Image (cartoon, rainbow, N blue to C red; front, side, top):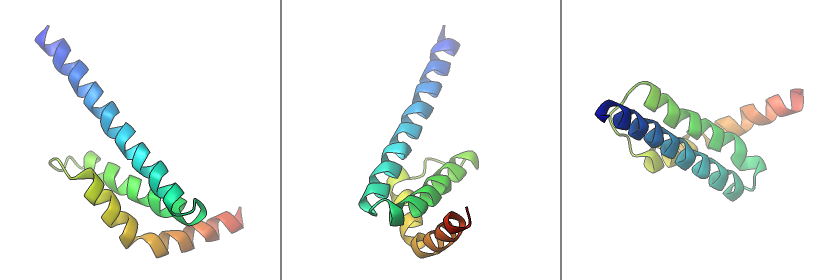
Length: 87
């Protein structure tokens, strides 16, 4: 039973992490007036998930998200708007 409960805990922890990043993504998209916040929020979300996939030890999710959002704000908006106009 211990192995089963460990698995349930692990799955619920991942669900909680993804829900938290989703809430951050929605919040920062809205705070960026949606159009200018959507692309940097998406970039920051992928930056956090990339660190999870690389199995980095317990990164601070909010700090990582906000630093990636600020760092990539202009670049991701330019590239995102170019792709939006192309499509």
